[in-house]
Image 1 (cartoon, chains in turn yellow, green, orange, red):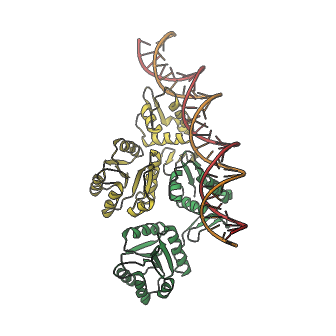
Image 2: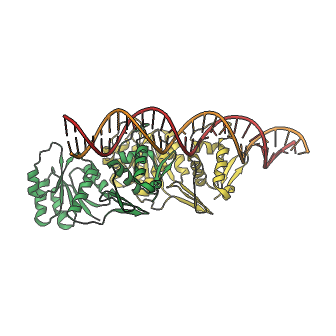
Length: 221
Length: 221
DNA sequence: AATACTTTTGAAAAAATTTTAAAAAAATAT
DNA sequence: ATATTTTTTTAAAATTTTTTCAAAAGTATT
């Protein structure tokens, strides 16, 4: 399991990333400024660092340079839209990738996964396989009994989320907040509809998504 | 695998080159001044040397002359824009090529590759081949069912990038950032258009580039 | 068994994304 | 300087996906 260090001075940004990182199956810790980040990198072994550029105390680039002096960890930088940054400067300081705020958490996780694969920090692909269902998170492919299944974006997102949280009771609220990324406190049946579609895609394994009446759903894997 | 010696007194320039060289699959070592470079060349077998002209201790030209006394390694010189240098002087000292700073790393790597091929310091070629599609990264040639296919520069870049990251879900953002080298967080359809062109070039294999709706694309290889 | 409440379904409407083709702009070669 | 090629932009068309809605089915409780 890969370990991520999330560095940002804004609490809520950290929380969002943290949340997504966890449900992607990563272990994650936080730091709220550059100095703290450098210190934590010195004392722990992270597989990748996600760091904001603009921070009090010590900005992202400087922290990056300091970290690189003692450890060669992949680093992804976050920059606010319009904030000036410069790719070359990034390369100089050893940044591996950039993501512009506001970012989609899914997008960010895709990049994390890509870098971890590339750097071979985790040579093995991110794959789940059990009882006829196989999910290749890196390639975004789902197999049922060895056959590829096409899904729509939301369907993938929803399924990936459930698989990553397999055997856990997930409340409707939690699923919606986590997969849709915001609350639509609607009284609509969007989630149900998606579950229906997903179950259809799962064919004879539709029963692996169990309805928890009054609560939500659980994927059994 | 070819081995490169990178000589520059500026750490960050070395890092940039190092990064790209590694990305291209070369092995690379560094020296920070002429004296050190000469010494390292004496003790190791490099296939090519990339060296800055202006350096403390011993400048590039002088180092070049010294190296040439005992070994005939191809040498590429880096000179700052506007910095005075003299082509004739270069030829006298046995320089094989010049690149002016600030340079495009890709450009530099192309020259490295060109020289290595020319001098026949043959390294094993970087080639991908699978199911009717063959990509010679070194020669920048694409074959479909054995026939050469002409592509425009961007088309090559895009295709190479996708092939190097085969079977990975690549987000549009990531592709654009990585291939174009900057973000246009615009709303234009540049990438789509290039994908279309690329697919056309791939003929009956156009389906190997799969659209991941809401995400991006994936090359299947 | 009746009631109240949830979930499932299918179909239609609405929204979003990708593909296309063609023109404009930029870059390169002649 | 002019012609040619490549890249980007644009806008419309095609496609796919998401959401909504209302009826049907299912479950727990009384």
